[in-house]
Length: 322
Length: 160
Image (tube, rainbow over all chains, first blue to last red; front, side, top):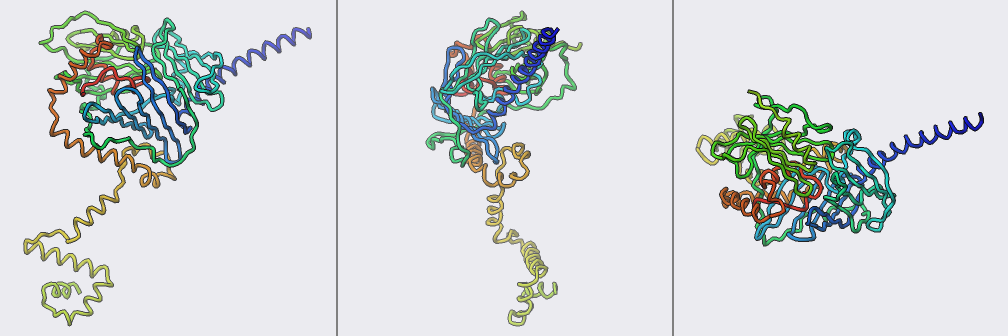
């Protein structure tokens, strides 16, 4: 009897330990999400996708004045990204001029995890792995695995001491690496002045604003279409009417996300001139899936960093009111 | 008092007789306002340039005092520091913004839409990696919802 009680106690304890360890792991990811935004650091990371790879020098500072970051591409065509909070300005050198683009920055490495992990917890399972050394730092590996086949999985290396994300790898359903971003070197930085927070401007170049695509908000009240059923875990995060380069008519653009992955849906009436194929077309290039179909006189196009089945499901979820 | 100010402006009172009026103008805010208003009315009636002599200088001063706020939302959360931020931090942003603003004017004059379209086609053809995905949709997606490597590795662009 004594042993039985002891055994029950042990099982209970191990179950308890297991339960807290799951929470602990999510807490570690929560810490990583905050650390990427709240720590001040500088370093160099390498970003790989498909056959291309780029080194990026990052300087990130969080002070009482806010969050500031400057990312300078060290390889290939000069490109600099300066962000303050979620406002991002990109300086892109193109031949004899520098094109300035304005963006809304989101999920930029190492802040790939959103601070609210709720929807991620619903769609991904979390598992801890080995400890590895990345950029001369000790890192705990976490596997953020897709619970279904509707999203890619992530392997994350989190600094054991500071919680900063040191490496992030995107894996497809065959467990193949389709994208990787990893620090080569990183060091915490003292919070100080913002002298560094300016683009290295070549005064001889011409600076031009990017050709901003006119967009307008679309509440979806007068749509000729509706979405039947989205793939599990995805929800609409944005919707607009925009011009797409090379198109004469405005296109409806809807963005869906599960918290990590983003997919775009484009809906437009088929022009009479282009008697293109009405057969569904599908493609996967690197980490991006593409799906196109023509339904009831409308062209439905889906593009996103999701498995092709998700792109097809979103494309097929669109129904047109007759 | 206002009648006397009006008279002074219209040279109906000799300056020597108006010493008390001028002293009053210097000390009283109301008097000074009346003085400048009557000058303004007079100028308007004569059809003169009715801007004050310091108008340009005042305007430029006021413009200089205006903070350039590119990210109003970013400062909302920080109540205590919000005021300081407006004045200290965006210095470099205002440089970026002013560079941008100047360039936009220059570019609007040069810009030709057809050029962009042809660049897009050229790019789409030159970039074998993404030939299977129409460049215009990929670009629209990456512009609106960028993630991961899309910030650094550009598979498509429409202006060279």
